[in-house]
Image (cartoon, rainbow, N blue to C red; front, top):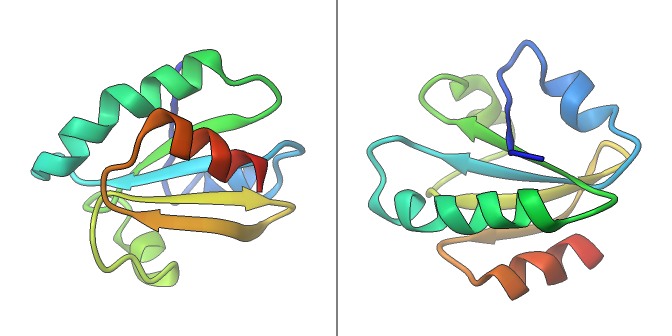
Length: 103
């Protein structure tokens, strides 16, 4: 399944109330490293079972970026039961992302 585009309006239902772990990619359209990470995140979204992958454009959802203290992009976070259980800033490998989801 492709990554789900999340906004302030659907964040609670898609991420906080999800019954599976959720990988959230906080990104910006102008960010070079985000563009490098995007195809890796999409691969994870297509391959992973038992988890959900979401993307949040920090320029469109600046309130969420502030709420979760996003200081640099890309930042990946894994939510489980509405709580952040893993966080990483910068470009990482697909294997590293899959390890984050196992946390």
